[in-house]
Length: 299
Ligand code: NAI
Image (tube, rainbow, N blue to C red):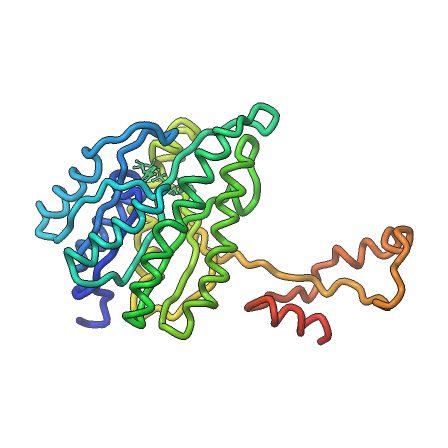
């Protein structure tokens, strides 16, 4: 219809869609005709507890505006939960076109004070959670020869932030997961990308002043998520920042560096002398995969 992006015959599963960004995505997809699986365990910000309320209320909102949705309260951190929510999507709607990995929790603490439980709680939801849901979804999408998978990273992961070594490790881990999945999915029409949102939610409400939060409505990030997961979009393997009125790409690039004779180890003193050239990013290049990087070393 006039080139507008519609999702009429498509099914989308959004994890952590009971509030914040996930809710905004769910509403936006539903408004454009998608059938939406609203997953949310209804946990606290730390990731504790369980409530059916958040997922159910978003489903109610979608139905109230004439959209199609159903709730799922499985945990993404559990392989059985991942299998079960993907199976529920297929049982209910017959297929699964889009997966938005969005569920998350927060437990800021410096590494000096971090307990193994803190590390596990964050890695389990963000990184293992993405695996637990994406693996079964990917198998369905392979059979369909179509799929769009999105992961949610964070500026903390991409650039680093005090008190978030576990969160940043998980969020950067998702970039690695996405980059390799993008290669594995290519021949079956499956595309994977990463978004780094900035939005007012219970995750950020006490970190920023009200006048900044005013410009961070989660609804302002949803259009990027819809575009990246639409059938019209051919992008795969990209990382995109969005929020505070800014939309831009993040890319890993490799400097030209220096060449040395690989048959003779360099002395550390020699590295010290050439350090400026090693760090120089003039003419830095991105590489689409590992093999291109290795071949690219010689060009
Ligand atoms: P939020 O706390 O409102 O949403 C996260 C949702 O995930 C909650 O509804 C929670 O119940 C759910 N959840 C937690 N553990 C779960 C589990 N095991 N299984 C299923 N659902 C679970 O926070 P927000 O801000 O909407 O965050 C969404 C995503 O965006 C997260 O991955 C977060 O790390 C990421 N993010 C958010 C930023 C922001 O500025 N709000 C910045 C960068 C990243």
